[in-house]
Image (cartoon, rainbow, N blue to C red; front, side, top):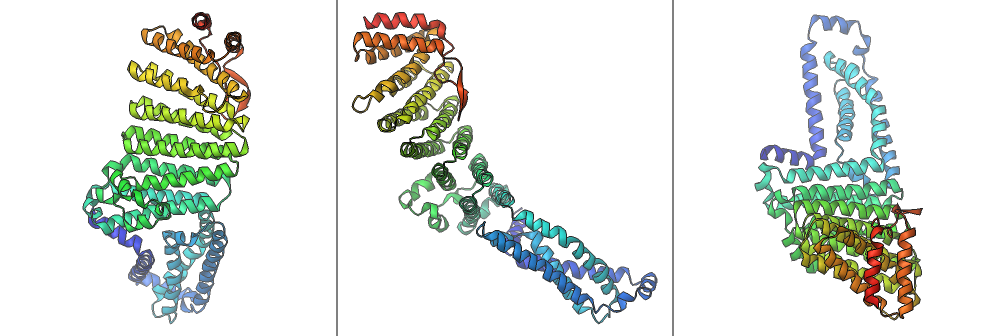
Length: 536
């Protein structure tokens, strides 16, 4: 296994020379075989009846035309394509079909020069009747092959295949000792980082949404493939080598080199930085669907991380979600547009759902605290940008869905009380009271009452305890208002639940689902009795 792989590595590192030698040996062996096969009386009769074989002085000019056609077309195509895709020439210098076909026509041209004196009739037959027709037949398909390969989608797929091939090589049993050598481990790092940097270059150079989306998907797919086999990779591969330290993504992380090495996360950090840059760019160009794609792909990575049960990577995914939340809040406040926050809150909630299903209690507690903190940040921004007021309700709705899932999975009562307590802080004003705070309080109260109705409908000892917590907190909030105003707010809340259906009457970035709807309106009378009695 090791010797085969070393031969494969040598062939990859010296593709130019290796392809030349392979094709030269192939033509030489083919020439010897043809001379051995056709040294017969039958061939002599064919040779005598084919005048073209007796005078092949035309052949060098024909071959020169073929070489000029192929190389000229190749240069023109790559030159034009390189204006849109950087470093394209690096890819085609390593493209084996191009190298083999190029050496085929060049060595065939050299072959005809060597046999032009016609001292070997069988060689003339090989050149004129075999090599020349084959080359002419494949010229046109080869041009189309090059055109197809210069499409960004094809380049992205090839980069994915190359990177995935490196990841597969990392876990081959026979190569463990080979990778334990620092120089060899760094070679694998170079291969992976080169592919990721090329993907990043394509992303920033191509402005078509289709290719940008493909780049994001491929980058995240590589992360998932890598995470799935990470535990089988030799330890030396994760060493912070000079190659990693000199990579542009790590230039400002010198203080974290040891932590990255200990956590074995250099590749994830690299990919998450690419994903973060992509999300930031999509926000700036108002590409809402592509920005949402970043959140969706990060959820898929989070699901894979939960499957492999890696706490370090869970923390890393949480940090990336928080960073994207910061970007989205800044974008929303500058443009007074909540759409990106709306979709990102949904994806953040989906990731926390994965944490809940995986039983990651500590991570869930931390994530819920983050949601509460960002809700307060949105509240502060909404004092100046009124369109952001709705996001507080959206984050509260996501927490409600998470708490329902926690209840259905029957987590311990202390944890549920702690999470519900954090949920009830989503409507706490963090600055001076304004008209905006009344609007936010009303929207958040609707979500809190919706969760309370769920608990009342469940009718268990745990649900009664949790519903009482919510009712007491709502009463505490309402008591800051005059009694008449508080009673009117309760009636308004009850009225909203009676008129809200499961579907919103407009299409939004998340479809037509209505976050203020509750399927448990049969418990409204019970809730009204409890809240009224406590307000007296």
